[in-house]
Amino acid sequence: MNKDLLEINQLTISPKNNPQLHLVDDISFHLKKGKTTCIVGESGSGKSLTALSIIKLLSKQLSVSGKFFFNGEDITSIPEKEMRLKRGQNIAMIFQEPMTSLNPVLTIGYQIQEAVKVHHNLEKNQLQKRTDELLDLVGIPSNRASSFPDELSGGQRQRIMIAMAMSCNPTLLIADEPTTALDVTVQAQILDLLDNLKDKLDMTMLFITHDFGVVNDIADDVIVMFKGKIVEQGSVKNVLSKPSHPYTKALLNCVPDSAGKKVLKPINYEKLYKMMAK
Image (tube, rainbow, N blue to C red; front, side, top):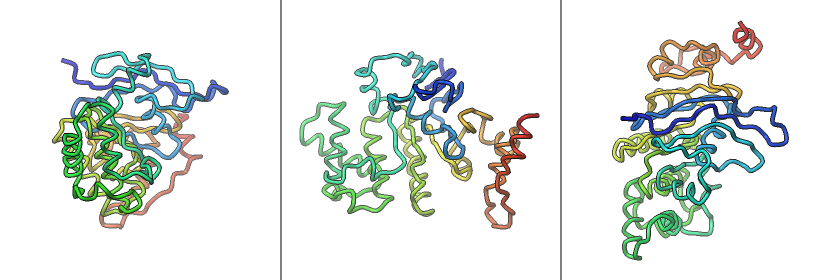
C-alpha cells in the first residue's frame, strides 16, 4: 500500500524569459499520508513557489518541469478543468494574508458558501447548514456569517480562510505561512486548530514557514530549502537534534531558547558559502 499522498520528482521552476535562472532547482520530496511536513527557509528560498506549483497556480511567466503524483495518480499534465476540480475537493491551500484573499465587499458567509458551491450541488438550507458547520469547526459563531472581513480580527479572518479550505474535506492541506501576520497568542491558537483539524479529518498537511519553533511544534518531517534547493530533509527529531547541513545549523542558531539565555547568531553568509563549498 502506498503510504505517500504526494510525490514530487525533479521540480524546477524558472522565468520563461531567463530559463537559466532556477528559482526552484531540481528538488524532489514526498508527503506521507496523515503526516505534517514543514518546508522551512528564508524569504526567497522557493517555498511558496513550490506550494503554488503543486496546485498549478503559478504565474504564466514561469516555466515548470518535473513530475507530480497525487495519491498514485500522475497529475503533471492533467487539463486545467480537471485540476480545478482537484483544488478544494482534494487539495486545499491557506494563503499567508487573508485580506488579500477575502473579498472586502462580500460577507464571510457568502464567501464560504461560494467555496462549497463550486464542488457540491446543495439546496439553500443545506448550504446554510454546511456554512454553520464550517464556522463551528474553526471556532467562529454562526451569527458572524453576515460580517464583512474588515469587521473581524486578523485571527478570525485566518480562521475563515481555514473554514473555506476545509469546505470539501481535502486530503491535502497546504498552509503558506498562515500565522506570520498574527501575534504570538493567536499564532498558537491557529497552529493548535490546524493540528487538531489534521487529526480529526485525517488530512496530510504541507506547512510552509521560516520559523523552526513552528516546525518543532507541529511537524513530523521537515524540508530545509536554501536558494531554491533542498539542502536537508528528514524527520523533525533527526534534523533538529543532529542537523547535517551548515545552513540548517545556521538557521537553528537564530532560534531563541525558552529561557531567553541563548546568544543568537546572525547568519554569516560568507562563512556559510565557504563551508558549503567544502
